[in-house]
Amino acid sequence: MTGNSRRDQLNAEILESVSELIGRVIGHGEQLAQKLCIPAPFIKALHTMDCPMAMKELGKRMHCDPSFVTLVADMLEKRGLARREPHPADRRVKNLVLTEDGLSLKKRLEIEISARMPWNRALNDDERAQLLALIRKMLSADDNGAGAADDDASAAAILTAAGIAPLGTLKEVLSTGQQEPAAQVHLSSPPA
Image: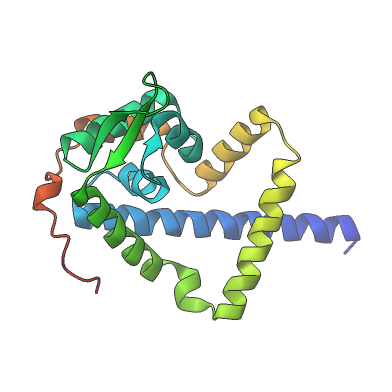
């Protein structure tokens, strides 16, 4: 086997494994969202939020369209998990602030997500540190490389390989989902 074909084989196996890992991580998130009766994108929004956070910044961190952030913010407000407030320095900017219920749900999500992740169950502390260093190295190299069009194409390819539906269906789930309001979610029970 030549160097290039070995490298190509490794790259293909890495892509396949990363795609499977992403699919599993997303699957765990979807199961947790179903258990808590919330739309799956709430998990990423709550995990991403440092309070208070400008909606524009939330969109950047979630890598999504501003209209999608507005939809998520509307649903979080409707469920009593967050509220919009004017930014203290610029009243044109709206901050999204988690309520007490939102903070409680975020804390529970963080605990349950961590417990479900494969690296938490399969890797020791040294291996997790190595994994984190490698991920950061790859992210750093990627920040210096591909343009936005390449990023979109790569993301679409990875999502397709992982069997993940496009964003349009997430918007449909959020706008048509009839889950329980946050007040009915039992936030005080510890994770299993």
